[in-house]
Amino acid sequence: MTLILDILVGENVLNPMTKYVNGGTNSINRKSKTLVFHILVLVAHFLPVNLLSSSDKLSRAVNYLSRYGYIPPVFTDSTASNQLTKEIVSQGLWDLQDFFGLNRTGILDDATLRLMATPRCGLPDKVYRRSNRRKRYTLMGSKWTHSNITYFIRNYSENIGQHMDKKRVKSDIRMALDVWSKHSPLTFTGIKSESADIIILWGKRRHGDKQPFDGPGGTLAHAYTPGPGIGGDTHFDDDETWTAGVDHGTNLLQAATHELGHALGLGHSRLTKAVMAPTYKGYEADLALDEDDIRGITYLYKFMTINTKAHGSKHPTRNTMNELCHLDEKIDTMFTDAYLNTYVFVDSKFWEITEEGISSGYPKSISSRWPRAPSNIDAALNYNKHTYFFKASSRLSFNGSKYWRYNKHTLIADYPKSISKGFAGVPDNIDAAFMWKGKIHFFKGKNYYKYTTDLARANKVVGKPISKWRGVPNDITAAFQDKKNKYFILKKGKYYKLRSETKEVDTRAKPPYPRPFKDWWLNCGKPPIGLNVFL
Image (cartoon, rainbow, N blue to C red; front, side, top):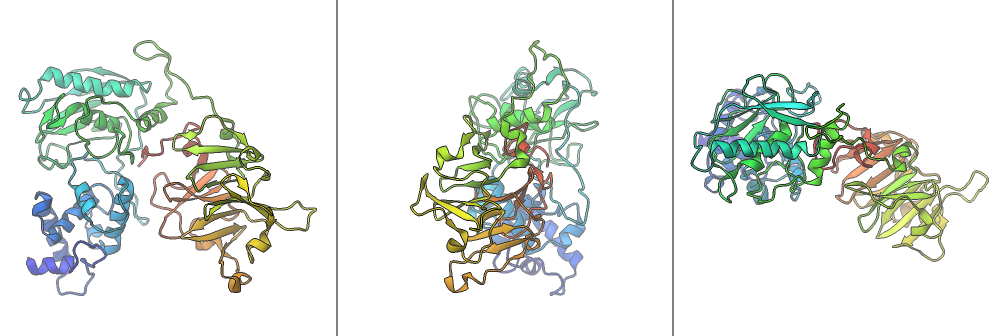
């Protein structure tokens, strides 16, 4: 087995760019390699990280990436296992690091290993997609169609009485449900029947579904999306030490609040402070939903028809919309400035956008922030900590397009200037502009232009087809980079997210792009930024 292991993992096992699955350059056939690979992953899964060899760490990492949706399911899909490559694993690590806010290297480093050793929820953070096959299963995306949800506690932990009694278990489950009820039209009723919407149970290892637990640590619990049969059911690993009100063991109230969020239809949040974050944070005396959790449950059930809640109060309807919610298809441009503030421009007005949606106090006039700036701006850009606005001249003018340059909010002397003087080779009447990997890219119609500061080459700038940016449409409204260095394209009220390493739209995201800009960015009845409501 040692010889086979060396062939599988290669020399540098901590770097997944090393080819540890080689499609036919050795004498071991593919089926043998897949079988041994599965054995290695199984063995590595149950060992503490500090006792694992480098190859075992890689095997354990592959198991983690597969289990939580970052690479193909290696245990259940033999075709996926056979096609597992260094690129797939590296991309999976990059996606994992991106999701948890780690340094994005695509390499199995110490920080990533520590994350993988952290106790967590058993549900995937995402569902791996391959373009040539339909998804195998859906864990999130549905919701309850009735407002009074029933639940049944089928059994209790075998260790009941040592750390908490049945009365406290019932109380904590009820409290977890009430946390969600407070911010939704849902009410919850406990019954003693298998016909309940949500069945709650404790089990070990293989406990009756297709998602076995893994013993102490690791996966703490899992839940299923709303629906018939097993839908909504919530399972807790009975190999864990479940506690209440103490800083040791696993706090039931915290875990139950998280898992029941899944049972109501919520996915995992990227925000570490959110209840719906995938990993267990330890005991918190004052458990409360994060704003992201609240937006998630509100978004899922905002259109549910209901007159009163259990306590008789009216359930609120949608919040009053900002006027920008009705102007999403008329946006002129948007950009993020040197101070990581994101702005949207329409006619002579602008709005600031944050992760919460539209900031209060907006709109404001463009000239109130940037004196002498034009209305109906074509493109906006942050370049070398200066703000640039681009505007085409009127049809009656032959002066060409102009651009304005600001240091903070002060117009620099001698501006505006002709675009042909400041950006030689770039055409008039551009649609959008942004920085991509340190270079300014302008967009116009069906073409894009990569600007160079090399004066000898400036007049040789030629347009290239936008089709080279796979999935990006022609005639875009805006191109911009957010404060987290993610890239987006906007066109007529729809937006696309670009993969940061390649010139293409992210095709693995669910729901797919383009998405409605007003729903996801402006808080016009939008889903939360951090929460994957639909995986």
